[in-house]
Image (cartoon, rainbow, N blue to C red; front, side, top):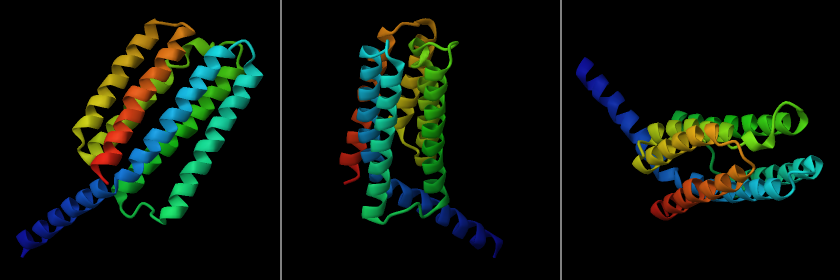
Length: 188
């Protein structure tokens, strides 16, 4: 009797993970849009770094567009997180975005932090978010992406330059948009 209950619970957990993997295509679309928007924000920051008010306004616009997109997709599809794994991963990415907005506000308002170091912190945060997502969904591609973000964060820690913003923008395309496209195609 006890064995049967354990087996049923294991099957339920397996079914939850498989259901989450099938629904993961929604996240691929978010990776694409947020990666492109954030890369554009980095490029604008690079070219407008002397005028932090304009840069701040550009970032507000980037996150406003991304937020409207995210809520629009969720409302249109009428698909919410249906299990613990989906809610966990969704909350990890929400926490990432809120933390990133806080970091950018501090970077632009503080005389002690330079925009040149901006790529360090998001790279570490992207490592954490991708690592948790990869672990939750047991996805090898996302594990590789997480590792690449970890390596990038180490490199950015030693390379403090305005040019690092352009490299970070390129990495967003390579390590967020491209995997988003792969996820979207794989799960269509």
